Image 1 (cartoon, rainbow over the protein chains, first blue to last red):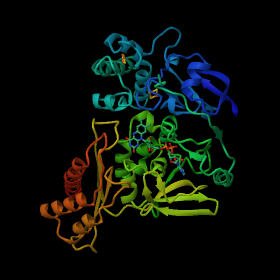
Image 2: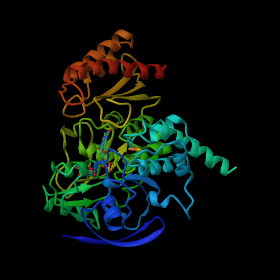
Image 3: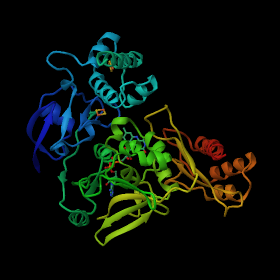
Image 4: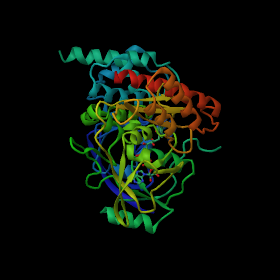
Length: 160
Length: 296
Ligand SMILES: Cc1cc2nc3c(=O)[nH]c(=O)nc-3n(C[C@H](O)[C@H](O)[C@H](O)COP(=O)(O)OP(=O)(O)OC[C@H]3O[C@@H](n4cnc5c(N)ncnc54)[C@H](O)[C@@H]3O)c2cc1C
Ligand code: FES
Ligand code: FES
């Protein structure tokens, strides 16, 4: 069976990994690189728990082959905090009670991060639309939407 | 117990150096290799053991596959590997083909649309494909590279059955081309699903209307129905009714009935055949009314 040696930048660090053809990006992150923040909920594109950023766009890592990330830049939930400082989204999620069991949270954070990157001032409708592909079985979503709204405000006030 | 989230079955990932090499490989391995685009349909089918391919032939990296271009004389060309999100965000699409952007926006979720492609949606030929209707009514033509060279495949007549199209082993769609839209056209895609977003269509109705002096009514409407037949269905009688008689509420109701008669749906988990037929009637009425209002 064919293996491929790829070079991929993950959360700013260059990794050289040898992967079989049929390994997904999700499996590579969790099983080869021990980045277990990214979750496997359904392995079929439905739940969004595996969402990571690939070259600046959020993707379902269960639907991307590891070999396809040769030369790519990946950001996972582990890449959100810097020097022990949480991303404003993480702070806002904690403050607004957007986290219960936490299984959906890494994917929610990455999808929300992508939303705020393309639209720093989203309406509640924009937030809900951006999170359509992220399922949460605990919170009822209201507090997650609160969290994203609050993070947008935090970022806006920081950059004033 | 079955693993609820199984890994992918084993296959080899192939990245050919040229389109010719890719087509030749696909022909040599017909039945056990397929072109690999966003993979969003393919992975689900592989995991469900519905497909058993030994080779995934990546065709996203060839020249032109990632480009969107618009020519004011000839129209829009979208490379096969361009993602749905890039189509939705393209200023050319928003300005000249808003119907296409609107339909693409109803597909799944934002992160899925970072990978899912319009051409993959078309080649996959699911009757529920949300962008097939818009691609048909806008006159889409696929550019195809096969072992015999390049050819064009207009979408009219392209679909035969779920997953079955005019594409043959070795064929790789490299782009889709849309002619300039008719002047002053307006369109809408109405998707009925179980929740507001992120689900497959129970019924989908696409309508495009535009002034046309050669039609007795002064207008022409192009319609396409999703999820109500084995292939995207164009209700030609409904289109003829709207071309032949002045557009009145009665004409629109008559066309909606004709569209309902053209639908041959099945019962499935998303809805019954009877419900689908009635929804075709109601949604065609709603879609044509909406377009008609925009045309005034
Ligand atoms: C969770 C989930 C939700 C979804 N929701 C929707 C939805 O709401 N609406 C909808 O319409 N679809 C939906 N889909 C289906 C899918 O995302 C779309 O059909 C998508 O557009 C497929 O594009 P792709 O690039 O991923 O295709 P792939 O999976 O790469 O390919 C699909 C098929 O087309 C063939 N193919 C692809 N490109 C070419 C080419 N260039 N030349 C020749 N053959 C080719 C492949 O060989 C394969 O057989 C959903 C899928 C998932 C997993
Ligand atoms: S694990 Fe990828 S979407 Fe659920
Ligand atoms: S917090 Fe438990 S699934 Fe969202």
